[in-house]
Image 1 (cartoon, rainbow, N blue to C red):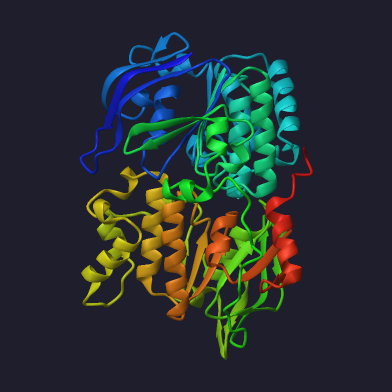
Image 2: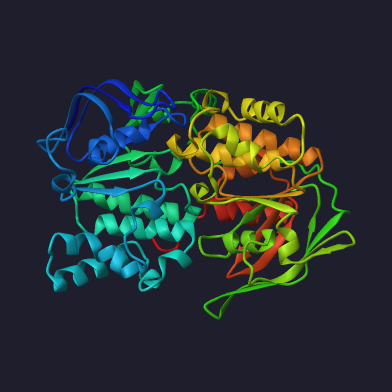
Length: 491
């Protein structure tokens, strides 16, 4: 059993009033519990209290008592809890200790002196269950965000823990892999494991969660049974700041896009360790559009985005816009990129300074920052250190910096990772406004709600090549619906 007895926790940070307050809760053995709510509501703090990262790693003021499997987290070191609690973080990169994937999966077992033969047996078992044998003996830093998340899941599962704590495990996964994750969670449930999930994407959990706990402003607002939660309409969920639990209807989407002005992606090529990976030849795309870049994990979307922006110096090919041609180096000043892991591009001591960093030669820079922050719900965080914010809040800061840059082409890699419905909608509206002001926006995403809200052109990658691209016509509608809502073939 997991029990919270009148628990309050605030972080040792003067930047913001973060944490949880007056939480009383009992979680029974074998239950699947989903914590949901807007970004910064306290979901991640709850998960850190259960796996011992609070107070073992994150310091602050803790009142009340959290008991996990008869351990009082205020009195027992984190290494004792880690024998029984497996964790998957929102950003899997932050939990890696090795360079190659196989060593990473084995790492926890080695720490607890599990015999070598047993470790090999467990690795074989968990990689088969997760269908990731093709990811063994791979460099973690060459993997996509979704592939890293799969390794993080395997690293937790290999310890065969009694409790799993997952912080937005689906944030960087494609739809097929989310279905696989759902199947894995179902198997863990069948084994009577207790599973705690902090999540924005709720649809894949609707058939396996026992309870949905809605949090607001650091407190438990409402506890729903599975049946009660299923009865909530999309309008009610959206008003709560939550994502839909029903499929998105793409059939009503209209195209308001002029396709006469073109961008040519010409002879883009890139290799990893001399192995050809990206090969895009003469692909004409519309200018002043919001282009959804779709494809499964590892299909080349993030690599394409880096090549497009000129980040990959060894990339070949040119970008043609009307009559102008831009080489790799020249594209650095033409494009602005929001990375999948925004921690790589947050440099300053405050949100305000971070956004100002992107503004060039504008005497109204202070007003520009305020206008952007109002639209993205960041005003209360202006003086906060970016690294003190939640994952979703960091994401919005990076997007704000992109908007402030005023570059002609914006490339956003999974921009709604960690965002609730309200903030996803705000980001969507801002993308539409930028398009109307003459910008071209590439959005690499697995988020069907974002695609439905703002995208008007679609580009699908597979094995480093463009399989198809176009507007929302009848043929492409079927392809998009198949991509987002087909079941994973690996189940």
